[in-house]
Image 1 (cartoon, rainbow, N blue to C red):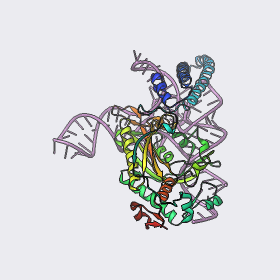
Image 2: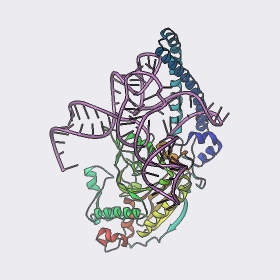
Image 3: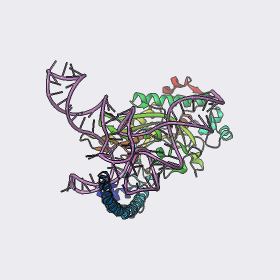
Image 4: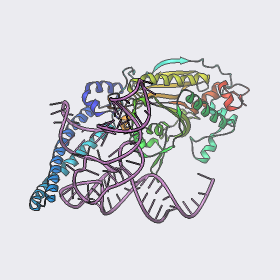
Length: 424
RNA sequence: GGAAAGUUGGCAGAGUGGUCUAAUGCGGCAGUCUUGAAAACUGUUGACUGUAACAGGUCCGGGGGUUCGAAUCCCUCACUUUCCGCCA
């Protein structure tokens, strides 16, 4: 959520940058917000003055009662009933304006960073870097969803029986590979200075609001009706919400946390070959890295995070590329996002395995995650996160790219974690 | 699932319906003392809104009510803790 003060003081700038995100009706929405806010201020002033008067009368009555001057107290009492009515009316007016402003404010996406390329779709994303050679597969190379059943390592049908589509069962070396990747990612993140946490994987409504899944995207999350809890779509939600309603000290920065969790996404309305096999699941595993930073450091940190994730892909010997997302392809809450994609050799396409974003104050404004600066003023911190990494598409690429006539070769770095060199 | 008790500032913890502008302690910050530190002593110590700056307003779990006036009384919801039951 954008800061109202910022919108008020920088209207033109806000409109210019919202245009990069292709936010429709920006002019109307922003103007309405500013106008409503002016109304709010006026109403608040009125309400405050009324309350001030009522407060002072109440105090006078108190003193009169104490000194036994009952008659005078009664005359003062008579004066208050009208005040009470106006007070009530003004409060209601104020509240309704505030609700109106809030409802508009949550529809406004974050402002993109000045370096974000303009564009509408994924076609317009900017390739920042490409690394690693795409493998030449042998003649009978197969897509991963055939390899998984050939070697009996991931069973999609069995998952359908137990739960439904998009909930695969990992078996044998497939399960072991999952565990190996999780441990590998966590070990690397810890070595990079991230503090490992194991958060709950169901969260309450407040947490959903804090990171911006609510009120907009509740359709994307599984919901436990009886207890009013949501299954997390990413560890970002609980890990970032650890800093909800917190005022940090400047010396607390940088705050680096990482965590492994299963992630749950309803993915309502997704069909077709994009969702084949491991490409899109309802439940998957992911290691997430999250940082809370000083505003002046956040872009430096964003690049560190991006390069860290790239390093993981290099270690896994996967060809990958880094994209800087254009305004139209970026998420609602992000100011700047890098996507990392791995080459999936049998599908002949790039698969997104990580998204690293700086949210600046967009999340922290809602979270009320602040810090005290050197002047003792409280300021909003910046929040950032990235996948490091999401497993399914990594597994898809590993299986497809490393397949040979004899079996699937495990990259060297994972062998100690797996305890085997080949899936055959 | 049953019963009871609770929810107050960064933390602990007081608080007979009227200077609550929330006691006190701890912690934090600043100062005195010290070569430096500790201890001791002194002072200071929240958030939001608002203003040019003051002033003013809001906040004692959330919401509602009673009252001229609520941290305090009433209703309601949420959460926490303890005990019992069930159970990994």
